[in-house]
Length: 70
Image (cartoon, rainbow, N blue to C red):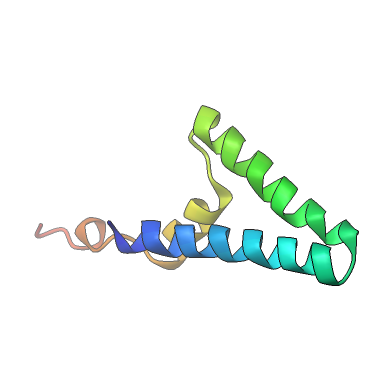
């Protein structure tokens, strides 16, 4: 598994767990967080665009693309 995929899965999983816990113990309005994240993951499956991967690509460019000698 690639590093970006591990970071992506960790962010998505962490936000889902956080949203559910906050929704159960703080305020049910927090359940919107995992709901919106689930909708974003669903649209990503259809469109191929994921905001988290976009941000990861901006923050951590691939090493193979940065060197012209590869």
